[in-house]
Length: 191
Image 1 (spheres, rainbow, N blue to C red):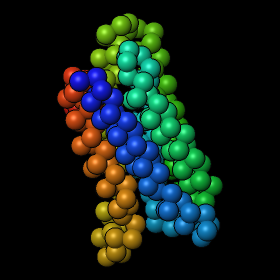
Image 2 (image 1 turned 180 degrees about the vertical axis):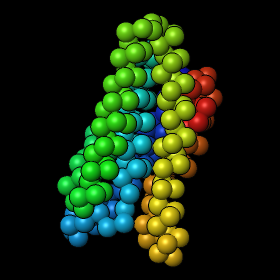
Image 3 (image 1 turned 45 degrees about the horizontal axis):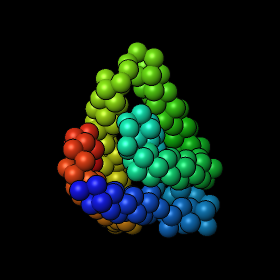
């Protein structure tokens, strides 16, 4: 069982890396055009928070190094995406993104880590971060839907991140299987 668990975890990591890298084409376009056009920052803001919390979860839960390493990679990649978004966004979108980044990815994450680290110990800390991470997965998995308004308005799926949506779907399936094998119900709850 441990061999199968490790194998599924590695497959999950590979799919997760592909999920994190799926917006590269979008950001090549943003850099080439010098504009974020109609793209939204919300999926990247949500994924950064999600990856940050799962990295913390993987660090504090014994034997969860596959969870922490791939999500640590996700933190780095999403930070690059957000930095590019901030650099190329028009002023109004830039300020909205900066506010979201400060409140969600810095403020909320710092509060979650501080509270759980200072006030909770052992399994209680793991459970609190597990519940929080699982709940926030809903937001991350739904965040590509932020483009739906643009899709309806422009009558074009050009701004709907297909690869991101596709790899989110694959990622959810593999990590759910991993969660069942590992009996880690937080990973399986919503991933």
